[in-house]
Length: 338
Length: 293
Image (cartoon, helix red, strand yellow):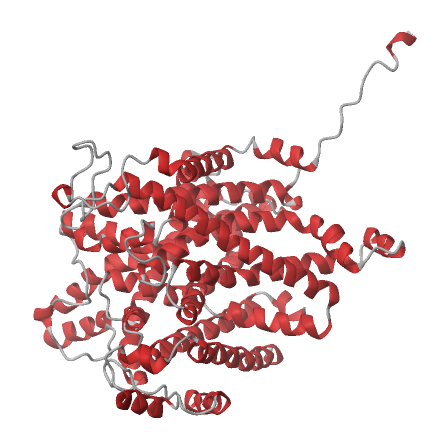
């Protein structure tokens, strides 16, 4: 076990180095003068020279690459061209918002996905099963950002149930404690006896979480269904039924336990993808997280910010995948032996 | 008694294509998907004839006309352009994007995968390492990175989507080649002096086609979605191109005033992608030998 974990950790090094290298060449190879692209047509030669100096663009590529690696290892990604603040500082401020949204979305997707998947499998080839599976396929077939707009149109503009964007009403301004607003809301409720913060935070997260949860929900439901169908065909399930154990118990205690194995992997992969998918959802819902920040960095051609954003999100993705692999090997010893 | 012998003619064995088709045609969902795809392809091909208006001709007086008024079946957008015509030309773009992106991915991925699996050695090691790193990126982010390098345009979006889908084909094909390469029929062919190139692409590749076809079908849907996302982020098609993702992006300001501008481009995307997903799922069920009765 320890050996497997060490192996998996060791594999991180080349992968992360690869990620860093690709991101470096993204800027180094982009056509045109990066300083000119970042500062625009109106910048004068002196400003350009200053930026080249700051970013080390006037040195040979090999040297630039080594400096870049060294800085990256120290988590120093330079300053944003747009705001002039250290990029890492901005990421630290915005990351909790993204994680909060991703966690709520993932909880929604996992809970509902498994529920729908099990029901579909148990009621195979009924109207419920068909509806659920067509719905799941539609879920992976639509543009997430469009779904977000439609949700806003129906539930915010039309019915007025939820706000159109943001994380908290402006009038409820407060000093963030954990930067997880739902958690902050609970703390403030206890401290000040006022649940308004929690309610506002919860109301704001509903629509973006639904939009973000759609794809993983659909994929988890499909995986659970097929895995469940396969498990239910197994002899031990038939035996349990023959022994007169109640159907509900057979399904949830006996079959589901084994059927969940492949689902765990899917949940992990989808969680990693969620963080990247947040670019579109956060932009639509004006959610002040890392995704919307990357979007505005792309629009502003803010290269240090794009680089750092891509590196951070990919690194988190790589780590989550590793944790999923390790978790899976803990649950399923067969993997370790291979 | 004997006049009965020799009169029964044996039916010719069905070709693999016929067999697949007969199994696929019994799959209602796959047929529905194929139907949807055919409609979109027809619209795409004949959009210049079918479209009632010029997709980029502005008519400021008629802007934001609701559907079914003044001859505008799906209404007009914020610049008075006919929504139906724009969607029809959009189908043309999306189908092209889907096919070209997947073409790039499949052609590149298959060639690399075949060489990698067949030759093995250091070439294979390096390729697999690169594939691992590419798969370490979240897919959306990888396309964004590549477009950022190449510069935002529809062509570059297609190249980016093609490159980021490539690793799947490399893995898929390589695994199949590894499994096939030591099989008896290949050893026999090698024994009679068939060249490596002929073995790779003439003998092994046809036997690995099934998973590639499934992947390509699903990949087209995914490419359509991805290009819409890139255009939405300003990294793909540029205005006034009637690309579906771009249309959704510019509809953002009208969620309060003109639902049709928001709704229809998304519905078109959803339908087209759903078609490819339905067909892809059906093909997988039919072509996967493990599921054959």
